[in-house]
Image (cartoon, rainbow over all chains, first blue to last red; front, top):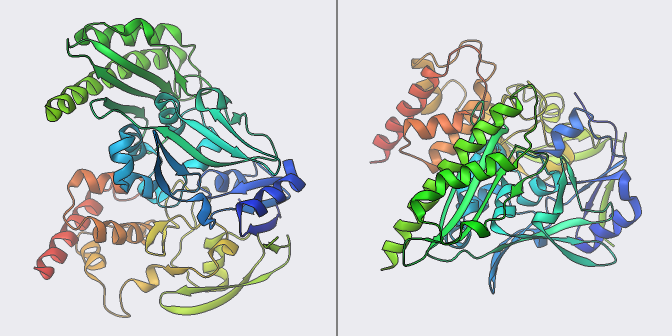
Length: 292
Length: 168
């Protein structure tokens, strides 16, 4: 299908973009790579009067280390993030998650910020951001504000972004060099939306017990979930996969749709969390050995 | 404030480099890039399938990267360098990849072929010695309803072999 007629705006600066948003508000859609908004426009799921194209804004691109976080511009193309050595070293979870985002051809154009703004419940980048403990930075004409990713995503396609705001950057805490990471997913076909995805990052103490842990799942409920992991600190590493899998599988209230029943999603959750924990532990051991 | 504005319903001039030649056409803001390439610039090798980025038939090379042309709008492409299937080989002479597709019978109806060739062109440039798993991963962004993919994978692996032998 073809979109409804819309006015097209291409601002030269972020200031111009947020000034337009202040004026047009709900009537406008912000277009970056178009890998999610494009289909929504073409299928007429969204019918904006105006489209604000930010895909050429250089100020929204780029990957930089600032103190203890890696900052990615909202307009950073997924492919460029996947190729980035800075991200591979400092945010390994994102490097592991990105190959699951769409396809080679859509990653060539889709952006990190676009995926976060769209907030599909099964999207990989939001899950990575939530598990990594990252932050979404929003700008409007009035102000700039920072929202923890765990608060940003509210429900399917629903976030804390206000109509006059746009995402300008994402902040990713730098991973410790001995931390292990894993991202796993099941979809009907590679590149399709995940039925369930799971992400895990873990650090081991010198005694082989869990020293730090973050874990979460996507595609299960209406937003990406990260779990409270305090109770697992000090646990023997070998016990983690089964214990964490049971904990998460019991805690979720899975969605049901034409692709999977709630019980199937729960079963997948249990299996994938266990796999993610095993892989993250193996990665942590390998990194710890490499550092010695 | 500097903002380019293009009003809904009005046609505006778009200029791109298409297969090495500067080309001009007109598009209203909502015109899909694939429709612009076909209807304004007569690049009929761009095939339009699902129109929401899933099937991969409309994949083209834009500034060297394989991208969907149905989930972008012509107005966004102004000033870019685009290569379609028409620009891959020379008239009357297939390139190594196209030749491998012919020899392996990697197409039947041909609807998905231009998109796959676009993707494979960037893929082989960046991954000159791919594994079968890497080819399959790249191909996951395309739907072919005729071949079952086996011949397509064989053709791409064969083209990679031919190209790397030529280089060495």
